[in-house]
Image (cartoon, rainbow, N blue to C red; front, side, top):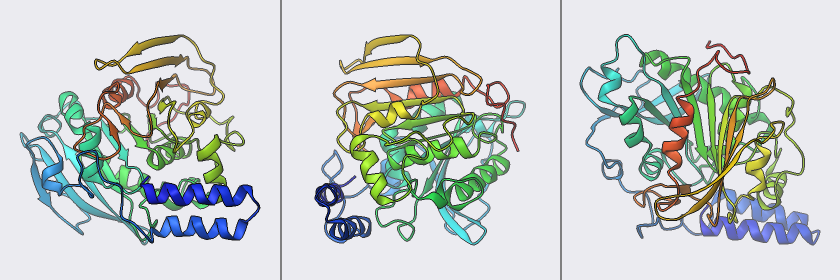
Length: 365
């Protein structure tokens, strides 16, 4: 997502078109290793995310529990912003967890949990600041989990959605992320029927992978500027899908899919807008409505009724928007603050679904 990364990808595409595959592969590998320049400046002019204590625009108690497998459960009446590490089958992952005071006070109704997967070069605190998801979650009593991709796993801190070993149930990153989700659900006494996953770009692509691989865990999925599960199997096919849309439908396009809400800018030059439509392959579009954000940014919202194969879904085409989180805050990177509020709309969509209520028939495990 940073300019150097995009430049190398453009170079790789040019070399591929001219049959210079060895040089194209080298360019892709250089992009992944992030050999040259640092990440692009954030919208506020900084060259890196702000410190964790600065990026969240809320008053919150920060608990530094680095390398602690069992984070403390939120205490009644206390809002918490927790940092911790989780280990599973020899893999470890850092994460941040937002627990609003209202969630800690719940007794009869366990709170919902939203899993948020950042894009390339981002981290948990930056993504939380840019999406303002904590602010929205506080209002409805939801907890928000932000897993962080390790740079050792991907040089640009991208989720490896494009590799076959990370596109299957009980393997790779999907297994690790879902194990973490289950752990937090149990530890914080969240509602297992109201667990959701969303992401931006590579995070959006991985969110779609999780929805396909674990429909018994995630009640609904949100994909912003991402790609469909099965759109690629290596870096070369990922590059092609990003530039021109997926060459083929997902490998399991006929499999049952959870309810899904998709946001994609039609001026996105990083991930082609056709990918957003491809995520809903197998669903039949229904009513389409035109609208605009309070700042005048236009969008088209298309509803997809539920069927035997697919949960009811929505596609938001963001007119004139690029590769950025719509309606986000300039305090985080890769956001478009004047767009329709994607975080608010995702939460609205998520909270209308529970496991067992939808056509995919998933049951919490």
